[in-house]
Each structure stands twice: as structure tokens, then as C-alpha cells.
Amino acid sequence: MQKDIIIIGGGIGGLMTACLLCKEGYRPTIIEQHDRIGGGLHCFKRKGIYFESGIHYISGFEDTGVLKKIFSYLGLFDKIKIKPLDNDCFDLLHIGSENLKVKMGIGKDNFIQLLSEQFPHEAHAIQCYVNAIYEICNSIPLLNLRIDSTDWYTNEEFLISVNSFIKKFIKDEQLQHVLAWNNTLYGGSKDNSPIYIHAIITKFYIEGAARFIGGGQHVADAMADMIQSHGGKIILNTEITKIEIENKKITKIIAKDNREFYADNYIANIHPALLMDLIDPNKIQKAYRTRLQNLEISYSAFILYVHFKPNTFPYLNYNYFYYKNRDLIWDAINYNLDDYPPGFVLMTLPTSENEQYAERGIITCIMRYDDFSQWENTYIEKRGDNYKVFKNQIETKLLNLVNEVFPNFNDSIENVYSASPLSIRDYLRTKNGGLYGFQKNCDNLIKTRIFPHTKITNLFLTGQNINLHGILGVPLNAILTTSVLIGDMNYLINKINQHP
Ligand SMILES: Cc1cc2nc3c(=O)[nH]c(=O)nc-3n(C[C@H](O)[C@H](O)[C@H](O)COP(=O)(O)OP(=O)(O)OC[C@H]3O[C@@H](n4cnc5c(N)ncnc54)[C@H](O)[C@@H]3O)c2cc1C
Figure 1 (cartoon, rainbow, N blue to C red):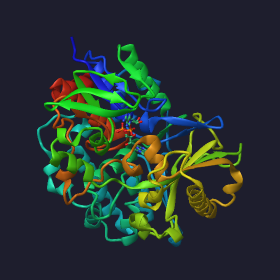
Figure 2 (figure 1 turned 180 degrees about the vertical axis):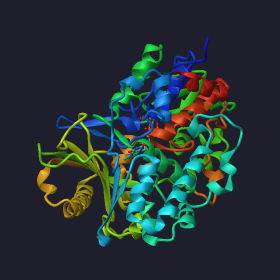
Figure 3 (figure 1 turned 90 degrees about the vertical axis):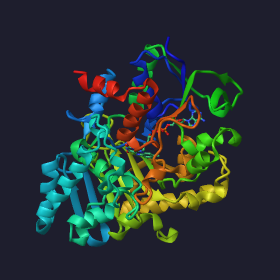
Figure 4 (figure 1 turned 120 degrees about the vertical axis):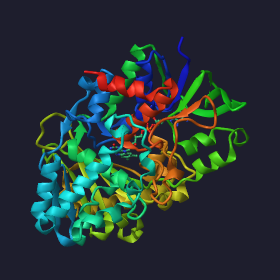
């Protein structure tokens, strides 16, 4: 008889860990505070239109992709609806002050060729740089579902900053900035983000940039169906507010409505700093608790969810990265509020496989949590009038900039809704509205390394804070967590690889 497992939180981390455990004969129970499963995968509805909360931009489902392998192993790949982005432009970078537009192409050779056409004097350097990015990714075992004992975390070459790495290859300053175009996808910081994160994200999207058709909720629902069909349970609308511990072991967890839940083992798919708030400080090692509570959180964002009038705004099968000037590619977070926004990322969201006009779009711009901190003790819909006024001002500023880049954009809007760092914090339950969990720092990587096992013997962690965030990182972290529970990583990885 397998031991009982409760997973607190039904984001992709909790769901993926539960699916992997189901394949091993476990029947895990997921407890989720929201009224639907998915966390960052979940979609919400406004006036009949669905919007995606967290994961809009994906990859890894192409033929050789690691996510295709994992989802196929779980019997879920066929249920996922994906739209690949344009081969010759999956991301478009636009630097306003230089009137520069650069297209990023899918496929390693295509990516190199398109960039080399625009920067012919750096063609050789671009090739070397991309080769180096691929080499870094190839030497990270888990990323390739490979088992070897090398601890790549201690490889010094992986730990230099993104900026230093790019400069090692590229002399042209404009191109140095261009190659950092996607740093908002990992909360990039010029001198602190370790190169391996940039390498992973860059290669990941070069290989198979795509979007979910209709949003990620169907992926979360497919995973929930699999768990339930294996005898697992999903309990919604249940927020865990207390974890009781005796002799370094959880004895029970308690929900906001005082219901109690018991299991042999518990997995937390919630932010580790928020997890610490649920535990009596005297019951967990102080140094461990303090470390988790004090780690830097990746930055937040202000988001616009746009419902377009029919047949007014084209469906763009690529992501539009706009920066007012090149310095803001790295320094957007240090914006002056009067000059907000420093730029934006616009994504139109596919509703079907082919569409000429967009029904929905998401516009995201980096934003500091601190700019909203005066309302940090408030909750959704109850933040007061001055919050609404401030939020509307930010919304208008962002729309004005988008309208400068896409004239008549505002005329194509049927409805627009916005989310501040506080909305992200409260809907997605992230710490300080941070987009990607803990911020990695190449000067002290070990400090931000979080392991699936904890100082409590029957408590394990899963989710974006373990290693890497996002649609790629969280499933890989789930493999780590599952391996710790079943006690054999080689066995699990071999099984996934051997699946036809
Ligand atoms: C705005 C935004 C845009 C993003 N865009 C992308 C993107 O395009 N592509 C990409 O790959 N990644 C993107 N990310 C990152 C990605 O969404 C996350 O890395 C990923 O969803 C994290 O998954 P998780 O399972 O670790 O956590 P979550 O998805 O946050 O899941 C945690 C779950 O736990 C639940 N929970 C929390 N506390 C409790 C409690 N006390 N009791 C019960 N349940 C609880 C929450 O409700 C939630 O469902 C984005 C993130 C944000 C915020």
C-alpha cells in the first residue's frame, strides 16, 4: 500500500508531481485554494471571454522537445492544443529610439542566419555565441532528461552574469542589448542573473516557441482528469492556513474553514516563504526559515487584458517586445514613475488554429511591487478609491504607449482589464506579485538553490522555486520532487525516456 500524499497547491508544479506519482501507483490529493485548478495555467473569464493568468508563452512541445516527452509519458500530449509561432519571427524586438526592429527565428540555424543578416559584421560572433548557449544547455543533465552525477551548479562557467557572457562574444553594443531582448521572461538582471538561465530560456524558445490555443486551463484540466482517473483527489476552494508539526514531522494541516487533513507525506507547491508563514516559527530551524523568507523575489508586472472588437486588430503570430530605448532592456525596473512605462510585451492569444484577427491580447510591463505597497494590506475589490485612480492612471499610460507603437490600437478595444502587482499577488498567491519566484544571483547561487526535501521529514517542495520557473522549469522540478519521494531518479528518468 502506497503512502498517502497531500499536495498543497494545484499549480503546474502540484499537478505534474501528482501525475508522476500516479504513474507510480500513488493516489495523491491536491488541495487548492482557488475555485479552479492550474495556478499560473488557470484562465479566468470576463464578460464571457477567457484570459490566461500566468503562462501565455510556451515551447518544448515540438518533436524533440522535453515537454513533449514528459506529457507523452503521462498520456497527455494528445490532449494539448498548441499553435507554433512564426518560423521567421517568433519574437520581434523593437527599440523605439533607434527605430530598430529585429526578428528572432525558430531553429538554431535560422536564428543565427536572421540575426547575421541584420548584423553581418558580427556573423561569426553570433554563431559562436549561439553555439555556446547550446553547449551550456546540453551539459545540464535534467534539461535533457539525462542522468549523470556532475553537479553543474558548481561549474563556474555557468555562473557568470548574462551581460559578461554576451560581451565575451559580441563587440557591437547594439547587438549586445538585442541578445538580451528576452530577459523579462526570467526576471533578468544584467549583472546578477546567471548565464545558464538566459541560455535555457533562449534555447528553449528558439527550438519551438508556441502558444496554447484557448489558454492553458485545458492543460491543467487534462492533468486533473488523469489524477482523478488514477484514484487521486482534487479539493478546490480550500486554503491551507496552518501546518502543525511535532518532532520535525507534520501531524496535520488545517484549512481556513478549520477542516483538518492528514497524510503520511506532504508536498508544498506554494512559495516557500509563504509556506514558512503557515508553520509555528519554533517548529522549524530558524536559519532555514530566515533564509527562505529573506531571499530576493523576482520583479512583478502590470498587465492589461484586452478584448478586441471583431476584425479590428490583427492576430500577431509572434510576441512584440517594445523598449523605448536600448538601456531599458536591462534597466526597465529602475523606471521613473513619471516616465512609466519603459516598454511592453504584447501577445495576441490564439482562439483557433487559424485566425486573421485577434480576439484577445495581453500586454505586460515590468512593475515594482513597492509602487503599490501603500495598499499591500488590502485585498481584491476592496482596495479603495485611490487605488483605483492610481491603477487607472497606469493603465492609461500603458495604453498610450501601445497606441503610439500601434496607431488606432485604442479604437480596436472592446474591453480592457488590468492587473497590478497586488492582483498578481492575490490571485496567483505569489510572494510580492513576483512573476518567477526567487531571483537567482550568480554571485551567490548556492543561497538561492532550494532542494525538494526540507527540515521537516515528511514535507517536500515542488514548483517554480526549486530550480527554474515556467512551463519548462516547473515540470522538471516535479521530476526532482517525485524522485526524492520514490527514492530513485535514474529509474524515473529512464522510464520517461523509454516511453515510445
Ligand atoms: C503574470 C505572469 C506571466 C507569466 N508568463 C509565463 C509564460 O508566458 N511562460 C512561462 O513559461 N511562465 C510564465 N510565468 C511563470 C509561470 O506562470 C510560473 O513559473 C508557474 O506557473 C509556477 O507554477 P507553480 O506550480 O510553481 O506555482 P503556481 O502556478 O503559482 O501554483 C501554486 C498554487 O498553489 C495555490 N495555493 C497557494 N497557497 C495556497 C494555500 N495556502 N492553500 C492552498 N492552495 C494554495 C495557488 O492558488 C496556486 O494554484 C508567468 C508568471 C506570471 C505571474
